[in-house]
Image 1: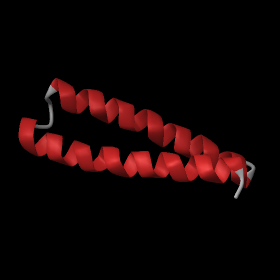
Image 2 (image 1 turned 90 degrees about the horizontal axis):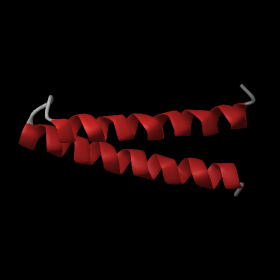
Image 3 (image 1 turned 135 degrees about the vertical axis):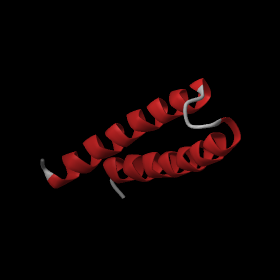
Image 4 (image 1 turned 120 degrees about the vertical axis):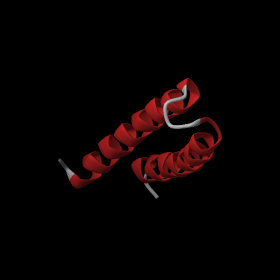
Amino acid sequence: MTEDHRKKENISEIIEEMRNQLVILVQEKGISHSEVLALSQRLDEYIVQYQITANKKSGK
């Protein structure tokens, strides 16, 4: 397994966990709560990292 593949898998796991946390947080606090927005922004950063890693592998 290549380092990029491991990194992609790790980021994927983090993204999935953060998505689950985000769903719960939205249900508890509402969509516009500051904690929801902060978590959403952090999740966006991980998604971008995942896309960068995926694009490296495909040569884009």
